[in-house]
Image 1 (cartoon, rainbow, N blue to C red):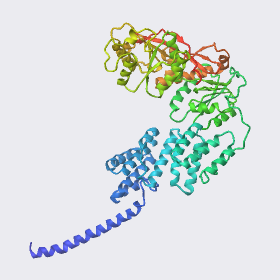
Image 2: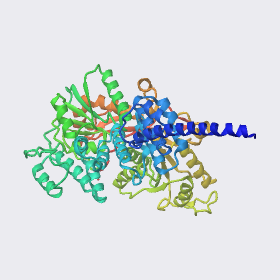
Image 3: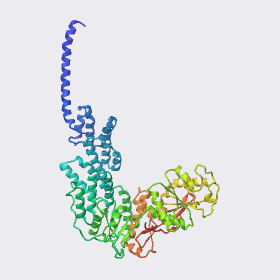
Image 4: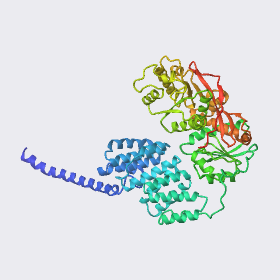
Length: 626
C-alpha cells in the first residue's frame, strides 16, 4: 500500500470508528431505557400495557427478559381473545423454555388459554402437580388465582376456596380483605360432608388457618349452639382472618328433621308445583341435563300437569335451597341427585314430600321421604334374586377390582346373605391374565397347569361341593363377556355341563360384531325396558330429545321420566305396595319405607341377537338396611 493510501485510510478508519461508537452508545442508551422498564416487570405480575407494547419491546430488551415479555404479551392476548397470536407465541416459548421456571410458565399459559376456551377440567389437569417451591411470589399468586378460577368454573366451590386460602399469605391490605370475603362466600355454599373432608385434610397437613376456615363454615351451617361453637372456635383461632365475617345465630328450638317428622303419608294426587334439585353446574351437569329432559318429557306427555322449578343443588346449602323452594310454593321436591346432598336433605327440615334421586346406606325412613336410584347395589340385588329363582346355589361373580366392583359385590351379597346362603364366590380382577388365573382357581383347576376338560368341580362333583360353580355373573362389557365365556368353554373341554351366565346393564351394547354377539348365545341379560327395545315409541322420543346421548344418559333420561310420572301416584303406591305401574326403568312399585323399586326385564342372546321376547320380569328387591 502506498504512503498516500495509508494516510487516507487512517482518518477514514477513525471516522468510521466514531460513527460505530456513537451508534453503539445510542443502542446502549435505548437498551438501558428498555431495561429500566422491563426489569421491573415480572412474567406473572400485573398487565400494565397492551400486547403490542410487550411485543415491540421484546427485541430491545436484554436476553434474560425476553421470555418474561413474551409471557406478558401472551397473557394480554389471551385476555383480549386473540387465540391465534397467543398460540403462535406459545409455540415459540415451547422451543425456548429450558429452565424449570420457564416450563412452569408455559404450563400456566396453556391452562389460562384452555380455561378461556371453556375447557376448565383440561386446564386443571395441565397445572396439576406443579412444584411451587422454586417459583417467585408473583407466579405463585397467579397459580392460585388461576386454579381457583378453574375450580369455580367446574362447580368445585370448596376446592376453589381452598386455593384462595393458600393464596392468602401472599396478600395484604385491601387485596387480602377482598380475598377473605371471597373465601367466605365460597365456603358458605359448601356442603357439610365436603367441608368436613377438607377440615380433616387441613388438620393432617397442619394447615391451622385453613382448618379454621373450614370449621367456621361448618359452624355457620349448624342448626344448634352456634354461639357456643363460635366462642370455642375463637379460642382456638384467636387471630384468624375470618373473625368478623360470621355472626352466630341465636339458638332456636330444634325442628324435627325430615327423617324424624312422621305424621302420616301426605296425599300427592293433587300436587302441581314441584321443585327439582339437580347439579346444574359442575361435572354432573351433563347427566343432570339428561335426567331433566326425561322429567320434562313425562310432564309433557300428561299435558304439563306439573309446574317444574329448577334449583342448582351446588349453588347453596341444602337448608337454604329447601327454604327457597318452600317459600316459592313447592308442594313436593324431586332431588337432589348427589348422595352427600341427600344426606344433608335427610337431616333437613323439609315440610313437603321429597323424592330423592339417590339412596343412602341404611336409608332412614320417613312418611314423606321417597328414594329412587339406579344404584349398582340395587341392580346386583335383582340379579342375585334372578339367579336364586332359577334354582342356582353356587354363583361365581366376576367383578373388576374397583369401586363399582365393590358396590356390586355388596349389593349381591346383601341379598344372598338374606337367603342364609352365605357369601357368593367372587373373583376380582385387574387384568385379563389375572382373571384367567382366578377362573382356574375358582373353577377347580390348578394355576398354570389346567388342560381342557380338567374342571371337575364344575362338571362332575356332587352338588354339595362348596367349590361347585353352577352360575356366573359378569360385570363386564359385551366384548369382555364374550372373551370370558370363550375362556371358560375352553377350560371345560368336552364336558356337557355348563354354568348359566347372567349379565347386567353394563353388558347391553348395540352394534356388536357378529362373532362377539354369537359368543354370547344363551346368556341372560337384565336391563330396563327402554334399553331393551321394549318401548320403541318412547325410545324414539328419548333419542330425538337427546340425539347425542350415551347409554348411561338414556338411563338417566328414563329415571327422570319415571320420577315425573310417579309424582301424583307416590302416596297411593306407598299405601298399596302390591300396586305397580309400567315405567321406562321397569315395573315400578313403592315399599312401605318409600323406596321406589323398578323391576329388571330379562332377555337372552339367541343366534347372536337379544331375543325380542323377554323372560318373566324379575321383581325388584329392596336392599336390606346396613
